[in-house]
Length: 196
Image (cartoon, rainbow, N blue to C red; front, side):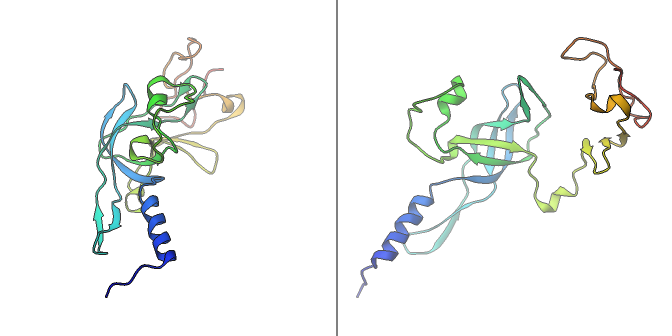
């Protein structure tokens, strides 16, 4: 004889079913990256668990999410750009509403044209996420130390005097002003000073 489910268990099941379609954030792996557009195809690294019709727990992998915008630091029309490689781990964040129109046109989107919420296709990726098992293997190209030093690869730059507030220039020409600047010598960074 089958039992009729109670109202609380029916409500709990309905809420669980709704929440199973709400995505907030997941780690992902870059499968392809286009540096010209800043888009990546990303595989979520955590599977989706659910109960089947027999009440058995099942797990399935999410599909690859194509065309995910990769966030890199920047503002005011300038940004830091660095390579993103196939296999890199990112943090996928899922927007509250559809971002299709915003991705294609930018600006304010009053009507998204789609009422989906927290959907896989509305992901953006933040690069740099690492699991604890591989974090120790990553060697930073640029590191700001607790002692106030800037570690560049294997060399160290110690900001001194009036130059400490200036930007480290990567080339002899300042890309913003066009003026010639001193170039850091990576073999002797502790004694090299930036031009004023």
